[in-house]
Amino acid sequence: MSSDLLFFTAVNILMAWSVYIALSAGALTFGASAFMAVGCYVAGVLTVKAGLPLIPACLLGAAVSGVLGFAFGFPALRVRGIYLILTTIGIAMSMVVILENIDFVGGTVGLGGMSGATVWHGAGAVLVVGAALWWVSRSPLQRVLDAVREDDEVAASLGMNVVFVKLTAFAIGSAVAGFAGGLYGHYLTFVRPDTFNVLISIYAVMFVILGGTNNFWGAALGAAIMTILPEQVTFMREWRPSVFALTIIVLLLFRPQGLITRRFLTIRLARKAS
Image (cartoon, rainbow, N blue to C red; front, side, top):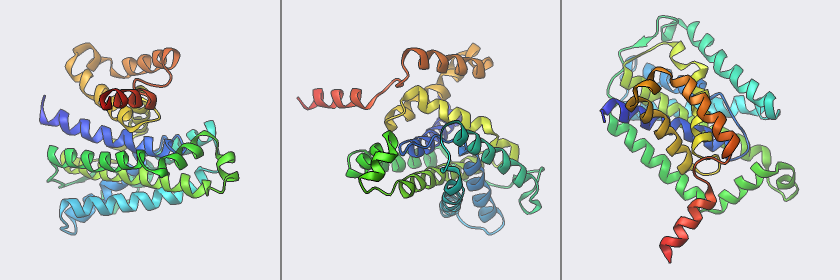
């Protein structure tokens, strides 16, 4: 397996987790590509124009993405269902247009000169974010997220600050996407605004649906399968969008909970313990 494929798998896992984090609080977002773009461009400007090292630049890009995620999430999360999906798609499409009209970052020409990201940076980011998600999954915070996701009205009646929980999850997911974008841009060395089209967001959601929507291991597995398998099977590479769409349709019909569920993981861990 090539280093390129390993790196893109790591980035896709981070993008899947960015969607999963927001979804863990009940917010299905198709705006991950917008915050990925922000993280990429902020980190790119800091390294190319200000000479900042890669990791600090990517962390600052993630921070800006997180702040914007919180700001955009405040009005976006006031709507639900299809309206939330359309709102986040609008955010993703608008970000491309905004970046195309900012000459400082290259406009439609794009931003180049970035470098330094390696497969090890991607692997390290996956390990750090994965460890954080593992800690959350075993902490009382997970029960709060579950309550908000399952029924936010009941959660609010129990004294939980539902709006803050959702906004925080949305912002953290945006920050993860921003960090992934910073690494992605510095691996490619050159990006254009349309590099971060809404299709990236759609794929990220597909990763989560395939692997499982209620645990982060499933999201990572879905990203890995949908990144690696098409590169190993020729016809899947040529018909990637169609194969992805058909896979999701079949999965929603016969296994809507995804490949890995939290109950499956609990059973497996219990068997190992015994």
